[in-house]
Amino acid sequence: MTTTRELRDREDSITMLTAYDAPTAAVVDEAGIDAVLVGDSMGNAAMGYDTTLPVTMADVTSRTAAVARAVDDALVVADMPFLSFGVDEAESVRNAGTLLKEADADAVKLESGPHTVEATRRMTAIGIPVMAHLGLTPQHVNRLGGYTQQGTDQDAAEEILELARAHEAAGAFALVIEHVPAPLAAAVTDALAIPTIGIGAGPDCDGQVLVINDVVGLGEWSPPFSRQFGDVRGELRRAVEKYKTAVADGSFPAEEHYDADADLADLTSDETPDGAEGQETPDGTEETPDGAGDPTN
Ligand code: KIV
Image (tube, rainbow, N blue to C red):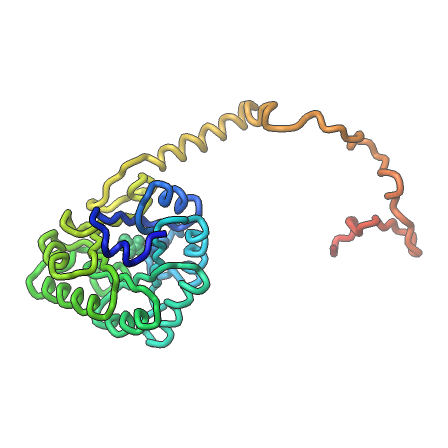
């Protein structure tokens, strides 16, 4: 099993992908990806929301548990959803702990800012490994006014660099850096001993992360900084259409898909099996042995 320490000490580039269900997580793990992020991107990627804001602790807990059951080797990182942290410090720490305790996550990720430095310190101190996340943090979409590149001017870039240092000092074991200019991601990577994992942040990070829908070509839309390595949407569509055609033209189910030879009595006859005759009740109605005729059953 990959540990947070191994991730930190890796020589090769770290690979991380999101997954939100067991079969996808199993494939990602079998392919040798280092870390599986149960991202709150599930809001857009798997749950049909326009943003990640409606995603709840219950959503992340159940999907992380499904992913953790399917993964043997990769590090499983659960993303803390909007409002599960940052409101009340004790509640934040407890929610993070729940993702380890009830969903079997190995670590949590927090969309970070000045407000998460202390929470990162407390979580780390009690044994909850924290992955920080700076740059574009989609939970702040309403404040940012869109999913735009961050750290594009000197002050903003310096603020991100300072926050990266502060989260490292607070104990974060890795940092996701999203949608910032490549030179800023390179400078942050240079300044930290913990690994940086970039998304839309150029080639100089210690690793890369993408949303699984973008990588396999499942989404209707993908951000320009992602790349589609497959056409799963097209493949799904073709399979579903073939199924529809096969049912319509009678080629499915074919003989190998059903059992026509079972030795059963004639089920179309009106006679009920021996001993199962309906019994007459005092009011003259007939009662079946298992009460199957009773609509309240
Ligand atoms: O929620 C998510 O999938 C993420 C990644 C894009 C880093 O935060």
